[in-house]
Amino acid sequence: MTTTKNQTTITAQPGTPFIDMVREFDATPQVVYRASTDPELIPKWMGPRGLDTRIDAYDLRPGGNYRYVQTDADGNEFAFRGIFHTVEPGLRTIQTFEFEGMPGFVTLEYGTYEDLGGRTRFTGHSVYPSVEARDGALQMDMESGMRESMERLEELLPGLG
Amino acid sequence: MTTTKNQTTITAQPGTPFIDMVREFDATPQVVYRASTDPELIPKWMGPRGLDTRIDAYDLRPGGNYRYVQTDADGNEFAFRGIFHTVEPGLRTIQTFEFEGMPGFVTLEYGTYEDLGGRTRFTGHSVYPSVEARDGALQMDMESGMRESMERLEELLPGLG
Image (cartoon, rainbow over all chains, first blue to last red; front, side, top):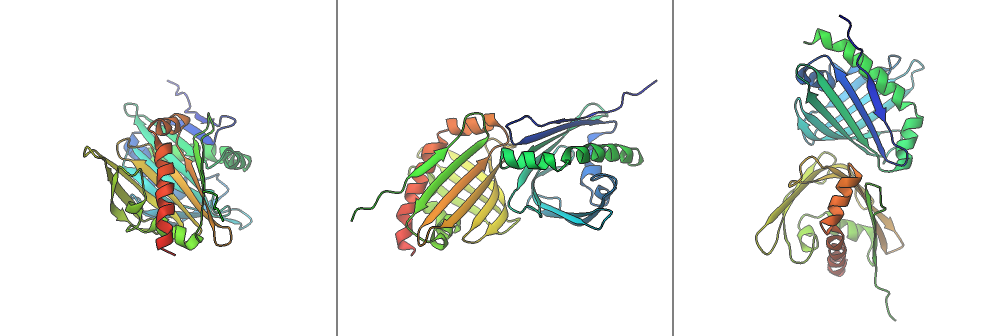
């Protein structure tokens, strides 16, 4: 039996401030949610493989803050932070997101975990403060980083089941 | 000497998830910011005159939460809540906003206070998760409530200078 590889679908309609991502995983929502939100697991999948991720804070509750720093091969650091608005374990998170290199451009990130009967459909909906800010994020090659993150997350899941 | 009345300008471009508001006040940014963010003063101006506003929580710091309840003449209650992401006194706030009657439709609200030399230009930028959610908010007569709130806020300022 051959398994169809799970695909990452990223949609960014021109003229809107949204980026939408859909990705299915061969694991339950509980497992996908845990890998997505456990600060010990996040560095194992977040970002492209060439970056090192360090979690400075990750307080997973409404009003809790998070911050992480990614370091590239040349030692350049990129820091990101935000606050959780909604935390529904295994179902949904809604959180703010800010790249510290562009302060004031705060994004709202919706993450939804849908049970497909042992499999999971993860949906990410990113809302930027303007179409220009969204276009700027796309130009920073965010899309390939998102795809590589989802591949790394998939590789991590079998060890968690 | 006659004074030109300050106008509230509300912009909601079709096909976008944004509502933008601009309003000038004859008071300093410090005074306008205080009236806008002091939980003892907010009930004196927030919402149309027919509604009573009760503040349940107002923790004005990054990660702090707020919640308020508005009651109409028939006793119907409308509750709203969110979390502060950015708090720069006298300059800017960025916070999440959710009507508890429509859970999951979280908005990001930018408020900016610009110093015009003793006067203040307040700019509000609301970012909805979809165009449909934004259009729904407009249909709930949010616009007239915003205008009346700004009038009430203006009336409150002379006593705070």
